[in-house]
Length: 417
Image (tube, rainbow, N blue to C red; front, side, top):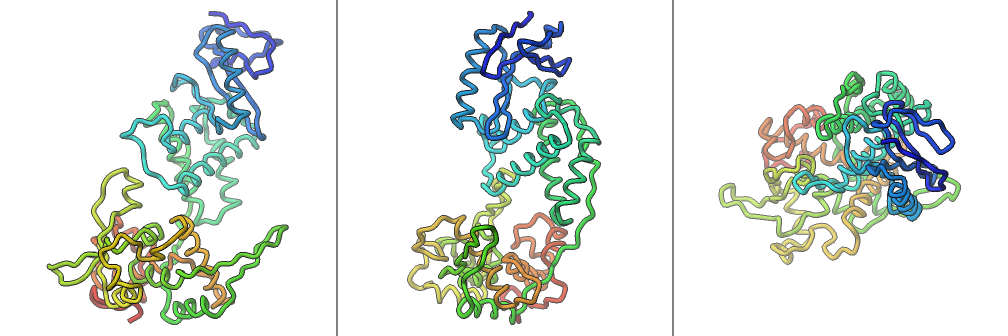
């Protein structure tokens, strides 16, 4: 069926998948009638949103284009440019990117395929895919009309050159992981018949810092919370000053060091997660493995955190006798802030006060506390620590966490002894 197009102010035009060209009312339209469809293109905030229609009738397509432009202008649609019907042989790069981001966000996704992903993960994923789109555009690639199957080594080269130039070697693999996930999704889940050109990319495996924090360092950081300035001068034109102090910082640092928990697990840990083991004759925390379950979408074995002498003393200080068995959180039980706010405060607070305590030293981050716990645990129980750490294998632990200089004995070890 031959499509017709008229002058309109709604971005409606004809697009031919064979010519890979779009036609307005003033263009001579090709004769590939079976490859033609109506397509909208609307510009908003420096970005172009597109949508392809099944309709072959001009008036029907125009009505859809009017609504699409209205939705984009009203902010109803955020970078969405998906055809009404998925044709694996006719998906542009920008359409593929949006399909992937919608899938990650669980939009129009069957319940059994939805994943409980964090806002941080979704944000990093969207940024990584958007970055690829921006790099291709800067290199004159028409992402609106170039088929995803046409991604080549030249396109990969544009991306690779930018990433190598602008990011540290430790950040490059994570950037590549996002793009590989994107392309593999189009191949495995959408059915696009293509090879993944990004599979050829190789980055030098960085040497991970597996050093632990020393006893002296840790207590200097705690002392800095009490005696050093809480204020941090931010950059930028406004020259803002940030207050990094929170009343729960010292307890949060200790709890992280004595449990080895990740931030999300730490701020959601409650007194009701504490159990007494008749078999081992000790207290232990039993909690869900949030990160692994979120990534795999499957229920994973529980995490077991034995309560050793250090942790027991801290729990008593935090009100164990009065609060045990309650649903209150261990850290800041009467909180009025979100979990994510506390997670950010712990990370930024540790970095700030470490710098206050050791202004001339290379800064260490909050995750050093987890590294220290796992390093001591590794020396205590060897490969059996896999049952307590929630990692998939020892290779991950040895690469990222285990400090060869740390020596400890037994599950009842004290940190720093």
